[in-house]
Amino acid sequence: MQNPSDSPSSAHQIHSDQECGFRVGKRVHWIGDTRRIGTVKYVGPVEGYSGTWVGVDWDNDGDGKHDGSHNGVKYFDARGLKTASFVRPHNLSSGISLLQALEARYRTVSTKEEEDEMYVLSARNKRVSIELLGKEKIQDKLSQFEELTSASLSYLGVSSTGSPSHISSTLPHLKELDLTGNLLAEWNDVGIICKALPSLAALNLSYNSLSTDITTMPQLNSIRILVLNHTGVIWKQVEMLKDSLPCIEELHLLGNKLREITTVSATAVQGFDFLRCLNLEDNYIADWEEILKLSQLKSLEQLFLNNNDLNRIWYPDYGTTHKSDNGCKSLDKNPRPFNTLQCLLLGGNKIEDLDSIDSLNSFPNLVDIRLSENPIADIGKGGVPRFVLIARLAKVETLNGSEVSPRERKDSEIRYVRLVMSKFHDNSEEITQLHPRFAELKKIHGIEDERPLTGATGPQKMASGLISVSLKCVGASIGEKPPVMKKLPATTTVGKLKNLCLSFFKLKSVKPVLFLQEEDSPLPTLLEDDMASLIELGVGNGSTILVNEES
Image 1 (cartoon, rainbow, N blue to C red):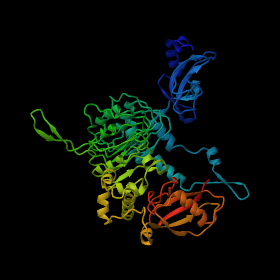
Image 2: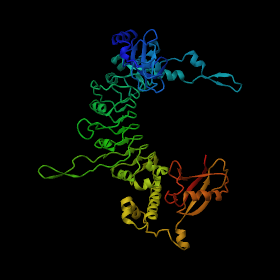
Image 3: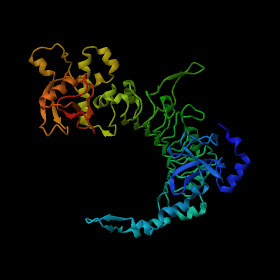
Image 4: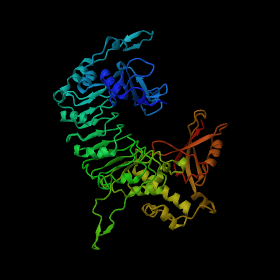
């Protein structure tokens, strides 16, 4: 393949840049579609075609046609095989200023064509025009920019600031600004906008491709919330932003392909004294050691880590003694790790061990935890049911977005103790090792030792191993059938119960699927393992099992 430098010369490309108004590195969008955004990678001739062309690498996969090559000539390197295309300059826009976008969003009058399209069809299939009541009043209010406290200018092609003094006089009371999906690329422009809006407290810059140079950012004392989702920001840049945002309380860094927390000097992130919420969802963080670098953030209450690659978590050592050079011992002087953390979202990771779950008890103030979509919380992947998680997590008040009521906690802990007793019998050493809260819960609920069900004889022993469950048909083709109450041995397997349901409900040509419906759980739990017993799955007295059909 021919090298791009062998075709158009760099001097010709510079001339072409000046001629068409676009330069390499410029952010652009397609005329008429402000959501089709890309970066200029080439300006100049294309072999076999006349005139000047702009080579664009589009942000969205599938928006392009090739990888920057044409007829065997490589003009530029694109992100993917079909993310690039050559475009005539008149089909591209390099954007507008902030105030131009404000005018377009809030002072645009509906055209006759747009109003003609506002209709409903009558019973006789005739168009009946719709008139929005109070439309003029709303438009008048929104067009009074000096009264605006919140503005959404998402996907309007904002690429420049315009006059800072004009911004200040036009929007003196603006507190929230959403600039999602625009063409801003320079932090200097972000700083100018923020300085021109002294009341601005919340700024959303998601889906703007920002440069790595943050040296020109001024100090922004009013900013409390900054959203930098899908901006390509890495933690080194976050460290550089720290001094510019002394009062930041919420920082959102979702979808930036972050793999590590790179600190400037110390082993832990310092500063951010008022940061309460840090969102690191949808990144590539795999090592919990990276997260431990955040453990000394003194005000951190919420840490969002959903959809990363974490497979194990633990609480760091604390309160250990260190020997100095003169032989004297001293206690660790750092504050307790994650001392203020109340909410930790870990959904959609790869956590599969119970030691990770038990370690969450060491976080001093942690009460809100998400573990859904991890192997450990998926019964079908060898995980444990909700009641086991609740029993093992002593302080949790909200699990997977659902409140843990006092009643659910009590029921879960009792069921958990009985489950452990049925499995381990008198092996106290193994119980202590695998179930750290067992002895504590047994004492709290006054549960006496019971002989194992295996080998028990006599009606009294058999009765003590029975549980009462309600079976309810919910399958569409099964038809309406009244619920059935049955007393079953706690050791009944799921496979056995499926066969019993065929008999209980007189079902034919149906493959039953069973779900455990728990009062305080938002969704029923699929009972997938045919070899698992009811007691192992947390089915207790009064439980409801839904009988559905395999689709």
